[in-house]
Length: 219
Image (tube, rainbow, N blue to C red):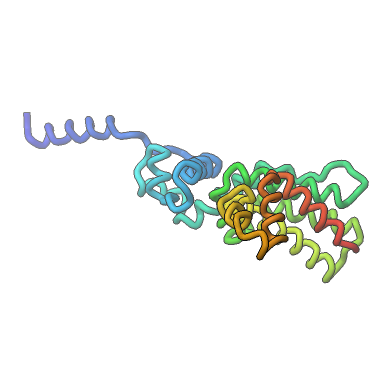
């Protein structure tokens, strides 16, 4: 048996033992990337980590996405893709907006590590569909031009601000406890407010805050 023949046979054996190339959808890529983030944090999101999650070589992953930035867009789309963008059948425009905001908060709260990506990738398809639905409700309510821009920006600013507070500065956290422990004689209002704040659940804080913001919006 020749050396060349043995080499070919060895090569064929190696090829048969290697995993076959996969055909991946954006959904599968997003799920893998989100699983990495949920398990190890946003900083752990790398092409290598996602490839390992999918059971493939890192270089093979580049056939589907060019870089981490593209993975981030897929993740944002995946999270907001669970949000129903159709407003409820309500006559009150404020309740329609409230429901859309509440759905967005719930979706992101399940994957809090993606919060920093929301501002970075605001043009992700799924998030823009929900924003379009909100703008349609505001338009029907009588908001136009400058007022509609400010109303929409105010609502999104509240949503993003709350998500950051909920997951990085929660009322039940150490910061609130530290404020509550300050000398009450020097900070009577701050200590009383902080003590009460520790009893408020995140979802209650969000919904009460959203109601306040919506009451202040007048077309």
